Length: 155
Image (cartoon, rainbow, N blue to C red; front, side):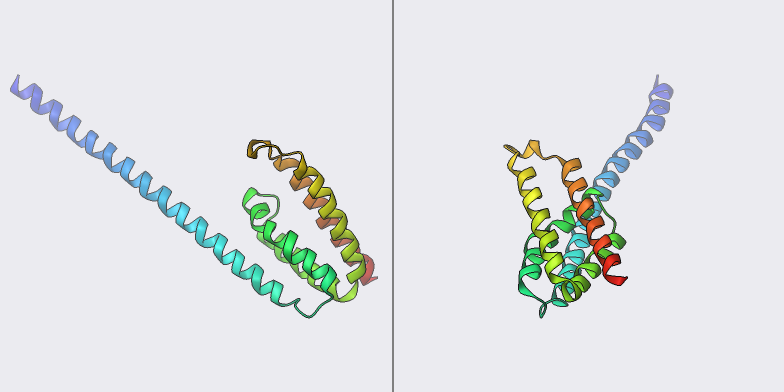
């Protein structure tokens, strides 16, 4: 009987300790992941602010709409996977260039995007109504329009 209980404890005790260590390490890993995500988002926000500072002396109409309405939404689009970091940087550089070369056209496009986005957001009665697909499609269409406008300007 003593041998059986020693054998059971010699097998069960290491298994219990390993399981406990695994759950603790999973919790630590989750906390580290959340901390890193917050740091990445704050770094991206700082980078966005630096990109905004590049456009401070450009026409006010387009700049204010882009900087006050669209740029604060970029980290969410980035975290939801609507675009990646390279696309975000490309978008910001195109917007900065278009604010110099075609501010009126950019203003029209941005106003149209804001109007369409506002209509989509009006349909949300509760936070559960958030439609990620519609918002991403709307933003990606706006991004494609920005790219098209830049290509037209370049030719």
